[in-house]
Image 1 (spheres, rainbow, N blue to C red):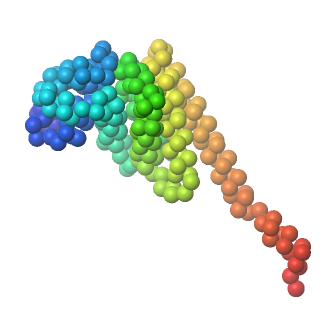
Image 2: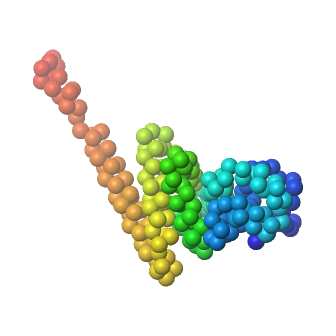
Image 3: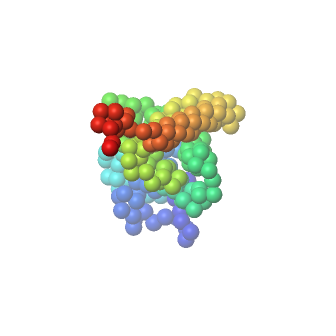
Length: 227
């Protein structure tokens, strides 16, 4: 697949290394199905897209994790383009999150093996920290697109939970042989339902807590009654 824009094939010679990484990432992922996330896949992708192989190697001198990070970034960007805030605003919050995660699953629907291999690399001890940051970043983008403006501890808990849901859903996805990945989407729906119920319960508890009289104040009044 040759990367292109409205005016025709992309001119790789005018791209920065960052831009080149993002442009080549989908083709590298496609090649990784057969070759894994390695230089063989990189060379195949560069040749397929018509990019200079030596420049492509320079762009990905960080190896497999650099390729995977570029690929995740390309999916993030595609998701933002497909689901801008104004489009998501028409949906309920649960539907917004589902639509965003579903888009990411659909984006890799035909490259299960590449996803499986990427997850194995990301799970390596030396890559775990970087992988967690990537998952957090994607979850942050999803919540921001969904309209989340929380700045307190909810900001962190929401992203941590969503990153966990997405990661778990991908694990189901790569082993799902059901028609249309039906089991994966059922799993995703159950996880999102669980989170929504938790959020409702938490909100109810928080509001109830605000309405309850302060125990300290109550005891204080017993000891020092107002006159």
